[in-house]
Amino acid sequence: MSRNWIEFPRVEGETSKQAHADLPNGSYEREIGRDGFFGPAAHIYHKHPPTGWIKFEGPLRPRAFDAVGTLANCEPYKFVPLLSNSSCRIEIWHTPHAMPMLARNADGDLLFFVHEGAGDLYCDFGHLPYRDGDYILLPRGTMWRLEPSAPTTILRIEATNGSYKLPERGILGPHAIFDPAALETPKLDEAFKSQREGEWQVSVKRRGQMSLITYPFNPLDAIGWKGNLSVVKLNWRDIRPVMSHRYHIPPSVHSTFVADRFVVCTFVPRPIESDPGALKVPFFHSNDDFDEVIFYHAGEFFSRDNIKPGMMTFHPNGFTHGPHPKAFAAGAKGTKTMTDEVAVMIDTRDPLDMSVEAEATEVKTYAESWIVK
Ligand SMILES: [Fe+2]
Image (cartoon, rainbow, N blue to C red; front, top):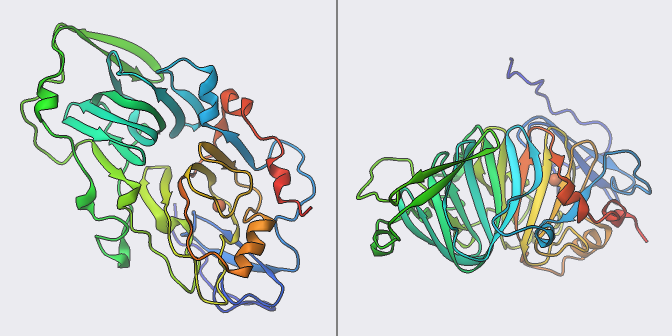
């Protein structure tokens, strides 16, 4: 396969010199891009808003649903599937009490994002306390269990048959976005050593099927470990977002973990662009090689109406999306100086399927929320 894209910036008609800034008077900029903001892209300057549709028909449409709301119909400890494809499974999970057994995922690395709750993780590598806003990355095959001190809701993202790595830092240098020293690892501390002895079971998931292994002792019995593979934890509060006061940087700059066929980005509070000509809200775009998912954790979501924490939006590729009319108008006025949203974005290279559980909590009028009333 060739990596040799056709490379040329051409200019036709009336355009801006710089993407996302100083647009021709009264125009709406739409970015058509490949390779998730890294490939060739064009900016088209339109007379009308690219999201100014009046009707959506057929299976393709922007979708929103209450991810946390799906838990209401499910028993504790059950992972509720939300969206999936062959390389990525996105699920939500609630556990009010300590897990009665250990778990192990043989299907790929697991990434947890703690939406609510606090407690302790015990795993092969030791003990690690957790709180809301933590990412916990469990390498494939790790044995683990949680002991919540407060009922815990977790967004679970499986890199099916794959692994998570850190994004390239490029010219930002190795300490940008978050210092790798901020990644915490478990400790073989007193809490780890004083776990219950006796019989323990490990529930193993392989190829989506569950098996049970029973030990007459507690297999979390490490007296030491060494190496460069471990469970790691990162809280969003340790992420220092990159921004430009003159240019709205694409969401790829917020990449936190990168899997083989998808990327996980974190939106955290940051100043809003201050240059008078710079766009103050996400630009209209068709990210044509990727499906885009956002899980809303906390704050006010400046580009979305009627979205509350715990909800998820799913924008399959194939249409342009961008700020809602009200958010676009507020951005143009430029009264807000900081964003206060915390959200997890998952962009997948392959199309995602939505579960029946997610569909049951879908906001069916979401596609219409762009219509100017
Ligand atoms: Fe997008």
